[in-house]
Image (cartoon, rainbow, N blue to C red; front, side, top):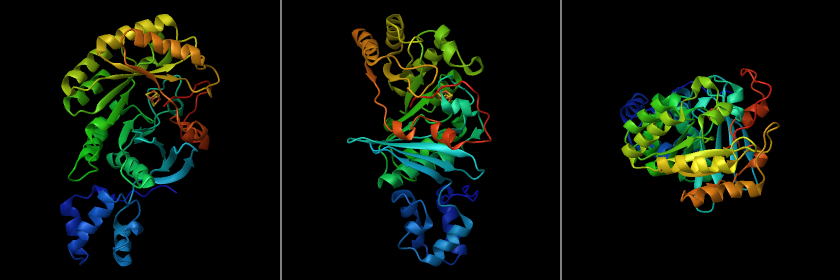
Length: 359
Ligand code: SF4
């Protein structure tokens, strides 16, 4: 069932909620109760508000939505990873993943329904672009994961479906809300990472915010020739221009850039590729996350484990801070787009021979 298009309770400012309570003959102390439930206690339904009378809960439900998301499918992996495909008011779906680790929890959120970039290895790109998510639809993914966790998540990574730089009008207010100590979730800006396929104008606009959000660049190739095999021309920019924008981001925010690099056997995983990548990382003062391609891809595959480690060793021999990212939630299809794809979204236009995206 799609979520409703009613205004979300979390979208109301202090004045609006106070006026609504007054118009409904409610004492003002209810304001603090409702505020606490939806901003501190991370309620996702009106019935969560145990100390609020049922009649008031019903009145609120008539005028507002407790969440812009209706989780249609929820999958739990043995390693604690949870993945949701949530229906939105228009029947489209959005994916969110909660990743638990002993020392911290991370939610991976989406910014668009489908994605216009259409990277060759990405399931979300295969689904095609439908629309940008609204600010509240971005925020509610963090609330959903926090509610599951029973406390606010530690980290937010904007690495799910969509190119965040194409939806900055909604993403920036959402991030400001998540970081706000007054009216938001009080998440440290340094615990938020925005990932991009490399849109220079968007990176510069985000830099202009001068907030210490982390920036991850999905580089995936050490040169423009290889990158052309992975990212269609329409939304692909020269590496030089992207790295100049990254340098501006680093200067404006003081945050070190991360290169995300999906390792694909025979495409971008040679010794020469590693050396060229190391030079780019050194030039940009970037660290590198290596992500072996999800083996569920039919056409391309990840390099052998030894080759991945050799690639890593080459980077570190150049003094580059680099890691191979462990994948979580493989069994529940935690790579972006896989859950929506699995459930079959007739509205999207699948292409025949594309491959899976890595988280
Ligand atoms: S990898 Fe990211 S930018 Fe590329 S198609 Fe997938 S969601 Fe879009």
